[in-house]
Length: 369
Image (cartoon, rainbow, N blue to C red):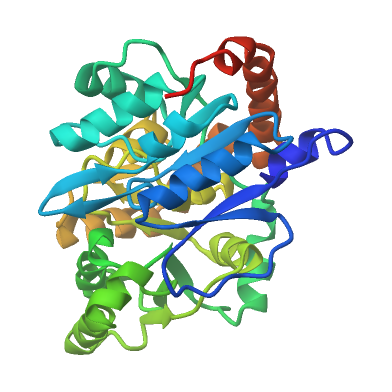
């Protein structure tokens, strides 16, 4: 949103329809104009009707399944369709998750959203084929990468010193902590890394995923801590259990020698953390999920099998033992990402939005459902 506004601050004004869980604190944010109660279909419809009465020119939906629907006995109950059916404004829908081989209910939710949207946006080229092959959506979506803030990777050493990490070789993973991240496998890899690089430190940064914490408390994090203790890695693995600001995330990435994504889901189509690491020009070791296979192709990073601590350790050791190779990966990742920063993405978003608005006459004449 900020990137689009910055692309034309004199004419662009953004307002938010915030999706909130019941009993969730309501942030005092001046850009929030409407509030939707997550999981309540009538609230999505009411928001659409209110937006229809506003002076908004175009609506951009940032779609995640958990935000726009609920699961009941394994069946997905879609609420985005309710919102879009009631909406009389032009709309672009960004699909953050496009899982291959979806269950029928999820497949129909995406097909329905695409049919009711003036434009569909995905964040990776891989998602284009997935939509065609697994969802039967033949019209090519727009591809606008996830984006990241502009980052200067040249301050690597000063930043490491400023963060109190002088003399350490820093590996890192950031983002919500939950079992899908496969963090236990990187923890298990660390003893083999430390044998070769005794100053190595693996930083796991971020809070436990709020949905996981509501259901299971800190069980997963506690299991990770116990695993660290079982391997005797207390001096070599640390947790930063806090919400990290964008500035803190950037500082951590710039201070890191290697960024690791040991994720478990091979069908993961986008990863914001991976995008940030590319933008920071980090050498990356990652498991072979869809986004990583696309982003790290052509020698931009190292891909390993999921759930394989041995491969993680071998490839981390290989990069740490060959600084020239690590530097080559850093240059390639930064070069790949330099045109994906938020200022660049904001310009592409604004251009798409203006095209959608210019074609809005058809949607304004669409009969009420």
